[in-house]
Length: 339
Image 1 (cartoon, helix red, strand yellow):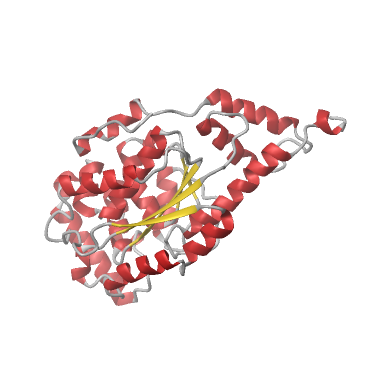
Image 2 (spheres, helix red, strand yellow):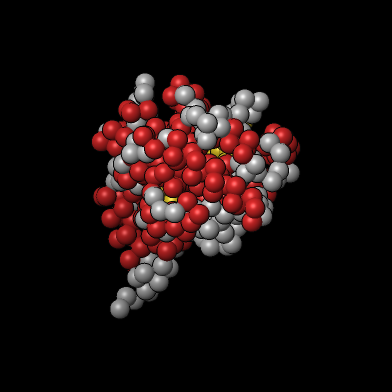
């Protein structure tokens, strides 16, 4: 199915009632196959669980990855006026150009793990508003970015990798996480691209002022996305839901990408049922966020680059899981006696 037309942010949470759910019969059939393969049941651990997950969302007992799509969304942020970023915002466009030339880490990781990468710059010359002074985006701007993300998803993909680029967006991610899941702001804030102690203090202060300014909408996750988020965060939400409509499993990247998608979880936790988290970031808020949304990362490699790099790396593990699932012989096929 296609993602239904959404005319207002308030329409998004109710999608959980109509979007496809896990195909339990396919997942059960995959589990039965795992238990018939030439190994002790459960001995491949998380690889078996990943195969069952893919089976349930692709609707077949023996899923395969013919096409892996990787999308990286880039945006700029008005909150950078508060001195929260150690690098100038020009770096966002410079890194987009680097992606397009094939010179970034995400290019190498997509190439080696077999993913087709597309980078989408979202109005880099028009940063969002400074959320300490007003909403980052109007509802119209937020929905426009949402649909840019949704329309970028290839319905023919078997798995979708999501990443982001945007100077200042670790502050945006911490603001979204704090608004949606509460707790002291300082527990969500980390160095991002290399903020020192003073820079981290500025981040905390900016987020606390932003939360105070927008305290009247903090019980509405989709309004939070517009008030505190960025275009790349809205695009990630659109891509997540378009993938769900097409029964495409999603691999989220680190803290910033997860925080964007976690807005959907806060709206209705079912909206992220088809999502894996590729890795747990070294950014300190990520582990806390994963606990809040009840997601276990595929990898823990102390990465904090962004770009979708951890998600692309996790794709290799997912491919390995399916290679074992589909390629191993059963006891009967191999002529091996079962216990």
